[in-house]
Each structure stands twice: as structure tokens, then as C-alpha cells.
Image (cartoon, rainbow, N blue to C red):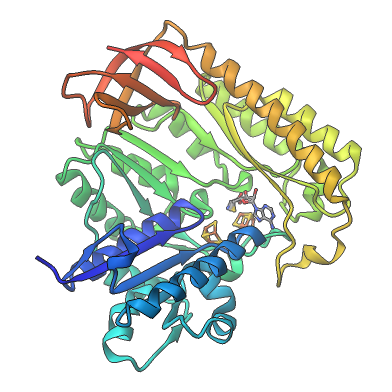
Length: 433
Ligand code: SAH
Ligand code: SF4
Ligand code: F3S
């Protein structure tokens, strides 16, 4: 039994979830046990997100809560990791002296040493290469694992902090990713989700030093027998190459789902956002991919209330959504971020932003609901990934990434089964074997 406990809370995107797992592995390797009871923790890590102001506020209020706990747990160390740590490390140390260590997303492999030696309290170096070589990769899941294959961003959209918090684009070598995949499948994993802030900008080297793209990497991973499903996210439209599009038709393990953020359906706003493509460019990608894979499920991200966004710009976004028909999408009110060029001209009224967000979300929900309804009484393959909240209830995902619930007394966990869809709720499906 371990007498040291670590508690980790992850905010933000899946790449943070992946990083949290790696931090957990580093400390489990040093004799810690994971706990979900913070009052037992000797080490608490908040793995933070800087993408919108609200995400950051949440971190500071959680730090306040941990500070109170620390009064009773004198030996507890508090670490702030992730994108807030990177963006405002010094400020955290000043504003919240209760924080013992601050470590950015590209240097967290150093955390165990920092804690042992107590000589360094803040590290925000971009050490992508060194980091991946020093991490530990143990699967903690049953069916589906994330693998970060690409990190950082060179695109500099005018609203976004990621190029500053995650650093320049970096791609891991092909062999490293294959090794990590093999490790996970040896413990039963069936689905691999390749992650990157710009995952389709992937350009890692293979054994003989040649640069390879995401399409190549997907082919290589699909050659591993035990891998049954492959997904990737998040993609940028300008890196959506023909070879990647065609892989959606040629590779049966690559799931027919594409998360491709556009942010706005107005060319004027796209230009101000520095997205480097037009609405038409996006529609052409959709057309191409539907040509080779007609059932592809499209997903996206939208920002409403960007500085200067007019009614007409917003109407264009609504028209664009109607044209594409998304199966799911995420939408946010523009949040001005420190250090990004867009923040100075935020001039859309708050009430207007809220009204636009709600109109946009109701259109997207409508599309999602009718998409899910279209599967009623149809047969689909579902990978059952975890237990549900109720007894004999399990949750899985279809090839189109829809959550699917089932009641069953059979042993169905980590199996891909053909089921019949019996009901569709707003955001999920129900099925029977
Ligand atoms: N790399 C991805 C997205 C990363 S951030 C891409 O290129 O699309 C995830 C989403 O958060 C973005 O797609 C965007 O919709 C949203 N987002 C990023 N910065 C934001 C900001 N300042 N305000 C509101 N939403 C933002
Ligand atoms: Fe941010 Fe744009 Fe890079 Fe995506 S592509 S991470 S939105 S700067
Ligand atoms: Fe947030 Fe950093 Fe991810 S800012 S969305 S945790 S890359």
C-alpha cells in the first residue's frame, strides 16, 4: 500500500487529459497512488486551461479552495500545471503564494525532480522533444486511449492563446507513436485517438529520417491488428490534404467523423481572425470528403460575437451551418485574451452575443437531434467503453462518435457489437443487442 497520494484535476481540452495521465504515470512510478479524494492528497495538481477567461477564473477559485484545505494538510504540495501556468506563471506565484510549483505543458516531465530537490519552483521552457522522451506511458483506460502526436501551433489566429501556451508546432517521430500504440493495445485498448492542437499539420520523421504526414501515420497504426478504430483531432482546414481526405475512404479503421473547426461563416470575420481560409475553402473540403466518404459525420467549433461581427456576418454563419449540417458542434462567446491581437476592439454588446449564441446553439441542436433520430431502428457497430450510472447499464460509441446507452447483463465491455438503435434522446442513442 502506498502512503503518498496524488490528486489531479484536468481543465480544458483532451491534450490536457493526456498530460494529466502522463503526470499521474510519472508519480505512480515514484510510489504515489492516485486518489479522487483531495482531502487525502499529499500532492495536488491543477492542470489548467487558458483558452477563455472563464476557464482561468475557475482555476483561481479552485486555488483558493485548495489553500483552505492546505491549512489542515500541512504536507500537501500544490502544483499548477498546464496552459495558465505557461501564460501567467509568475503572476500565479505572486497572486497565490500557496502554490508551491508552477510547470508549463512542455516541461512537466521535470516535476518529480522539482519536487524532490525543491530548487526550482517554476519551469515554463518549451522542451517538447525532451519531454516525450522522459514520459511514462501506462494505459489507465479500458477501450480507448488518447495519444498526443503533435503539439503547439504556428497559425496565430488572432483570438487564440494556444501558440503562446503550447509553443511552436512539434511532431513526434512515427516510431515513438507506434511504440506507444503497441503499449496500449497490449493492455486491451481497441481505439486510438490521435491528438494535436493542429493534428493534421503532423509532420513527424520516420526511421530513415523522412518526414511523414498524418495519412501515413494513420496507415501505419492501422497495420497493428489489435487497433480496431482510429480517430484524430483537432484539425485545421488549411492542413486538410487530399491524402488525408482519401484515407477516409481507403482505410476502414479510420472512423467516419471529422472535427474541423471553422469559427465563423463570414469571410470578413475569418480574415480578422487570421484563419487563412475562406468559407468556400471549407465547403470544398466538405464536398471532397463527402465524395469519398458520403456518410462522414461533420463537427466544428464556432465563436460568436467576435469584435466587429455584424448581424450580416452572423447570418452568414447560420446559413453556413444550414448548408453543411453538423452532427455536433461546440460554440463559444468570444473571450478577449491577454497577449492576443484581437482583444482591443471587442465592441459587440454582451446581450447581442448571448442572443447570437443561443440562436446558433438551437440550430446546431436541431441538426444533432434530427441526425440522431435518423438512426432509429437501424443497425450500428458500437464499442462499449464504460459502465453507466445504473446497474447493468453500459455506454459506448458508434462509428460516428455518438454516445450510445444499453442495458445488458452480458459481458459487453470493450467489445464492438452490432446493435439496433431503439431510441434517440437529444444527445445520445439507446440500443439493444
Ligand atoms: N486548434 C483548434 C482549436 C483550439 S481551441 C483550431 O484550430 O480550431 C478550441 C476552440 O476554442 C476553438 O476552436 C475556438 O472555437 C475556441 N476558442 C479559442 N479561443 C477563444 C476565445 N478567445 N474566445 C472564445 N472561444 C475561443
Ligand atoms: Fe488556436 Fe488557431 Fe492555432 Fe487553433 S489554429 S490552436 S484556433 S491559433
Ligand atoms: Fe486550454 Fe491549453 Fe487545451 S489553453 S484548450 S488546455 S491547449
